[in-house]
Length: 66
Image 1 (cartoon, rainbow, N blue to C red):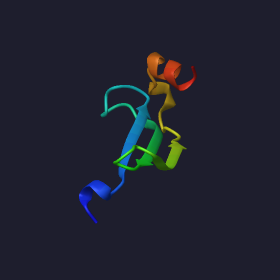
Image 2 (cartoon, rainbow, N blue to C red):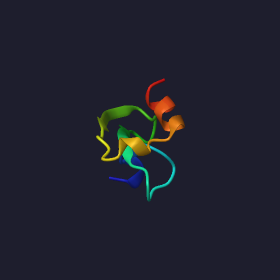
Image 3 (cartoon, helix red, strand yellow):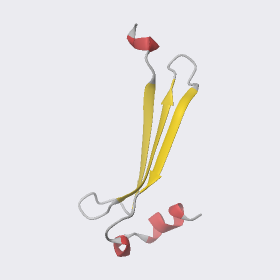
Image 4 (cartoon, rainbow, N blue to C red):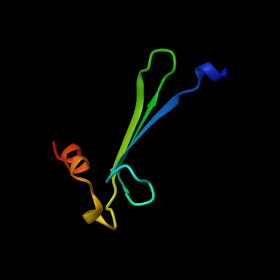
């Protein structure tokens, strides 16, 4: 199998803010796609319960609950 025939993953995370030392991941999403036509093979997502929700920045809260 050629490398171009292998699927690829797109990963997205949402956090409680922009500082990785202070803020936490709250959402994770993964999409597995074909390389040749970007057809979606599989999708997965999860919400993560943060330990310190009080640290969430207001803008992150807006994005989480539009």
